[in-house]
Image 1 (cartoon, one colour):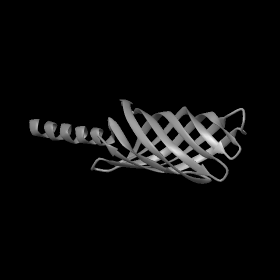
Image 2: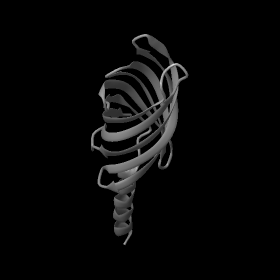
Image 3: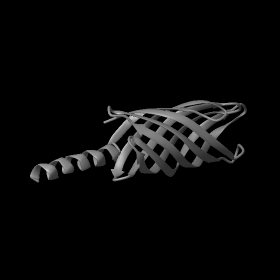
Amino acid sequence: MKNLILILFLIVGTAVSAQSISKNALGIRVGDNDGFGGEISYQHYLKENNRLEFDLGWRDSNNVDAFKLVGLYQWVMPIDGGFHWYVGAGGGVGSFDAGENDGVFALVAGDLGIEYDFDFPLLISLDMRPELGFNDNYSDDLDLDIALGLRYQF
């Protein structure tokens, strides 16, 4: 009976740890909706199913080049196996070059995605981040940023 309880405890403990999110993850996030962009991405565990994500990157779209920093609070929910889905909200700041119009902007962002946590310390994700930018000198803009992320977990 003791062996059965020990085995059951180990199985449940392994299943719970497989569904938890890592303490830290560092990598890249690549994509965009109307051009190309890349970001250095960092995720930090807060509590059971919550984390912070910070992305520092560059965007090259049809009319505007931008450099930005975005911070998001995310809720992570297990699906099955190593799959999770997540949703988040946050904001950011940046600078842009639009030909004759250069300046700074602020943005609010949402986040919706799916990720797979491999047995080794790699996390791959696909997400959509709607961003609404605000600036007095250039038109306010809604951007549906779609990207693929690869992060090393530690």
